[in-house]
Amino acid sequence: MVNNGETTVTVAGLRVVRGDEVALDELNLRLFAGEVTGLLGPSGCGKSTLMRSLVGVQRVQRGSIDVLDVPAGAGPNRSRVGYVTQSPSVYGNLTVAENLQFFAAVLGAPGTNVKRVLTQVDLAEYADALVNRLSGGQRNRVSLAVALLGEPVVLILDEPTVGLDPVLRRDLWALFHQLAAAGATVVVSSHVMDEAERCDRLLLMRDGAIIADDTPAGLLATTGTSDIEAAFLHLVQQAQVTTGVRS
Amino acid sequence: MKPRITFAVTARILRQLRRDHRTLALMLVVPCLLLTLLWWMFVDNEAVFDRLGGPLLALFPFIVMFLVTSVTTLTERTSGTLERLLAMPMGKLEFLLGYALAFGLVAVMQSVLAVSLAVGLLDLDARGSVITLGLVAVVDALLGTALGLFVSAFARTEFQAVQFLPALVIPQLLLCGLFTPRTALPPALEAVSDLLPLSYAVAAMQAVGTSATWTSDLTQDLVVVTAWALGALALGAATLRRRTA
Ligand SMILES: Nc1ncnc2c1ncn2[C@@H]1O[C@H](COP(=O)(O)OP(=O)(O)OP(=O)(O)O)[C@@H](O)[C@H]1O
Ligand SMILES: [Mg+2]
Picture (spheres, rainbow over the protein chains, first blue to last red):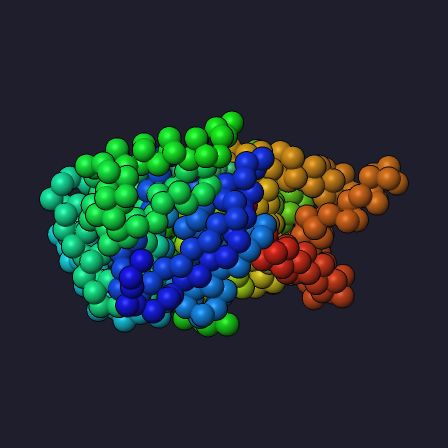
């Protein structure tokens, strides 16, 4: 794949075991600045586990993960890497603004950032609403706003657009591209295949392994299919033929 | 160590508590009501109230703070906010101190209220000074906070957190010298009660109740309770993990 951005994330030989399951196995990966990378695959394939590993909150069994030239989760990265967990992690009994002010204080980000991120996620008019009284999609956006507070260089977003209407989804994807254009490395997971077309680069995962790594157009071309879902099914079938069915 | 972050945590917890009227009532009003109930029970027998009132001034803050802290910290662990904070530039010590400071402040308020009520209105007869009484109550409340923080690491749900109350607190209550002097216990149980922090918390209160001056026993009791609180905080810090399975 042709790429002009510098390498910001390098994963080599990553193996993660969760419970009795091997969640990631011998995974290798490089991510680049200026790109929106989509992480797609069926439920349970290891998307969240990979993202947690990149942030440095996942216990890993083997392998190395370097993010911005230091090991994942190392001190300097804690204010440079923005992370949105799959389920919103904000305080329900605080207002939207109080949540953001608190996390801004922890990050040492200027208070003016609060207003900026509220606008970015389109929640300005809900600033004084208690998070508990928001809808699921609104709560997700508060969680996303927290990740944008510190002007992160790497953004790890675990299903940030779940439960959002098409207009909001379009706006948020525009925001992701805008951040990437400004030099950020953006990783977005989703299991909605139609979001795949919005990515600069796609990683298709299955059973803890990356089974395809290409641009959306490239993926369609190599598989000879007309949409990403069909391409994915094609690749899964191929994988079953070459490696034998797992489980 | 950044005080800014600790204070941010403290301010946030106090703000959350202010919204939660029930918990606030549990921490500030319920101990006062319980003391009043005790006074009423022994309204014709003041000696009993004088004997039990002091130790209960130690017990109520301990129990209430244990309960509230363990559940609050557990919620932080299960809601994902703890994971998020630890992925930010948040030190474990800053986090724990933020909690200890917030609940410590509440403990001070609680103790001021309970001691004022007991001594001012209910005529609790304590030989020692009101200030000493208040100080001992605060130290006991902090012990509850520290232990609550620690045990929250071993619960998965709020329900499980509450189960620590009968499992860990009530045995201490039985053995702490309130029901019968600890020296009157069978030797094995006395040895056990020598190890439990609540025994020292209650002994400190009894010392304030029976002696007008600050005794070396009181110092010793407070040192043991403080050591337990600091130990529990340190163990609590060890249970905060940046990486989880
Ligand atoms: N907390 C956990 N404890 C034990 N095993 C877990 C835990 N979370 C996930 N797993 C296991 O790890 C594997 C990968 O899970 P992961 O959450 O990474 O999937 P995912 O691709 O994000 O799925 P989804 O699209 O449903 O979010 C699964 O097989 C799952 O059973
Ligand atoms: Mg997931």
